[in-house]
Length: 308
Image (tube, rainbow, N blue to C red; front, side):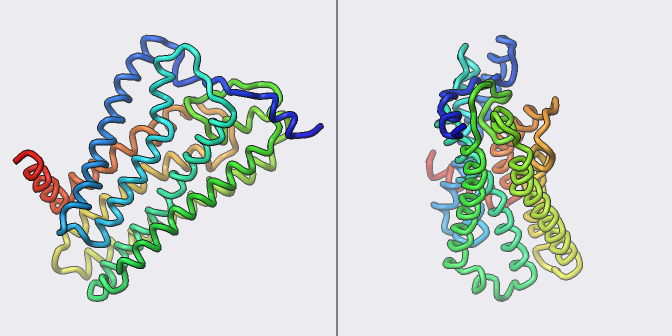
């Protein structure tokens, strides 16, 4: 049978959502709406501060501003639809919209992972080559690294969607999640998906584990270098790297839990997905601003300009 004909039979997917309790849905709407607003406020504040404050026109803060933009983009792929569905009786998404959401979700998610590697590289150069830091991490290099992170996310996402969209979807259309993602979608295919799952785990899970190990080892080397060879500005360097280690952990650990195993259903899947898609983009600006005196002072200067 022609796979294209099978695919055309499923016009939309029914999203199960986070819970079937109406009262809990209303409660979660309020909580996640507040979190989403805080995500926008925090990340937009960082972006605006980095752009307007000339003291922050350095490679590290240029990268931080771009990370804030990616966090906003990643959160906006899933949260608005989820909020809408929490107030809706019929939680559906068309096949095309599902594939689009999956593409942009993995596009931004992949970009974040590659971008965290770029930020680790920036800290490595700053600590190990302080006298040559600005020459090595010049604006052309920074822009190229940012573009490379987005390109990496694009390639990763194209592979995910290409492997999914060619599958035949001819019957079941109930998606046990609050957004479209690979593990749940391919389970609805009317064919054996073992090889596709294996390719997906390799593309997402294995890659995520390898990058996570590389980043943890890199930050360990950086932190050891700071403690033993950095006489001045040690506290600032430790604070900056510590914040980045926390951000790396809250990004990678949920990803590894979801994608680095065969696509079987676990009771914690939705909670971990909510943590990764809703909570993490809000936490990043808090982590960076609370542990960064320079950023806090720059935000104060911005607030004084706005309200003076």
